[in-house]
Image 1 (tube, rainbow, N blue to C red):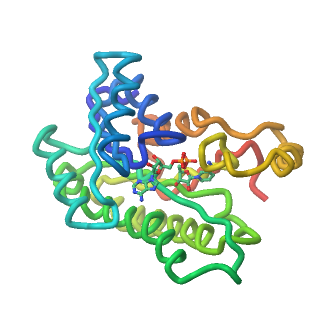
Image 2: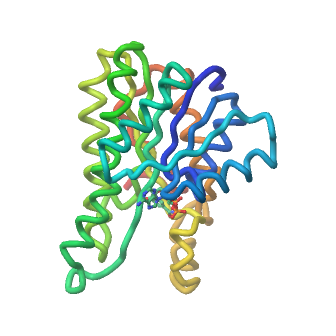
Image 3: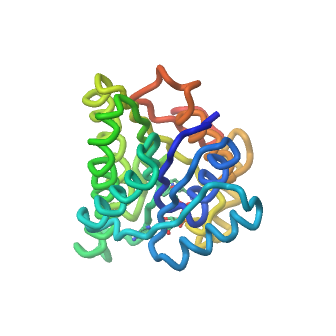
Length: 247
Ligand code: NAD
C-alpha cells in the first residue's frame, strides 16, 4: 500500500510508533524512524532487520525540542532519499499528576513534546512536501481529546492542541496537495500503560464495547490506511481507534 513512499516516524522505537514502522515496512515504504537517543533508534533498526534484513529502514535521533536539529536531520533525509511523502508525529509523553502537584516545568515538558515538537516536524517537512505538491501528515492524538481526563492536565490539553493543529493545517495545506489527519488511540497496550494497575484496567475493559484494550497493531492499521492512496480524499479527520463509539 505504500510502495515507493518515504516515511518519517517519530517515537518509532517502541509501542505504537514501532508498530507503525513495521506496518509501513511490510507495505514497502522506506522508513526513517526517530528515537529520543541514537542508541535506542539503532536497537529498533536492528530488531527490524533481524526480522527482515532487506527492509529499508534507518534510525535517527534529533532532539525534537530543538527546531534547528529537527530541520537539519530532516534535510539530511531529503538529501539521501530525494523526497518525504509521509510524516508521522507519534512521539509523546503523558503524566498523571493532579493539579495540586503539577509544576509549570512539567506542563511545559509535556506541551513541548506533544505539541511544539509536532509543529517543528511539520514545519521541517513542509517546504519539501509543498514543492512535491503532495504529502501526508499524521498526528497522534488521544481519546482524552474528547472529554479531558480527571488528572494530568497537560496531556489532554496537548492532545486538544494536536486536534486543532490537524484541523487547521488540513485546511491550510489541502490546496498544496498535503493531507493532514490524526489517529486518536484509546487505551493501548504499550509502555505508557504499564504503570496503570490491573485494578484500573479491568473495569476499563468492561466499559469498552469491544471488551479489550487496543494493541499497537490496531493503531498501525489506521496509520497505514490514512497514509495510503486509499485515503487520498480524506483530510482533517481525527480517527478514534479505541474499541468504542463516539459519545
Ligand atoms: P511509548 O511510551 O511506548 O512510546 C513513546 C515514544 O515516544 C517512544 O518511541 C519514545 O522514544 C518517544 N519519546 C518519548 N519522549 C521523547 C522525547 N523527549 N524525544 C523524542 N522521542 C520521545 O508510548 P505509546 O503508547 O506508544 O505512545 C505513542 C503515542 O500514542 C503518544 O503520542 C501517546 O500520547 C499516544 N497515545 C497512547 C495511548 C496508550 O494508551 N498507549 C493512548 C492514547 C494516545
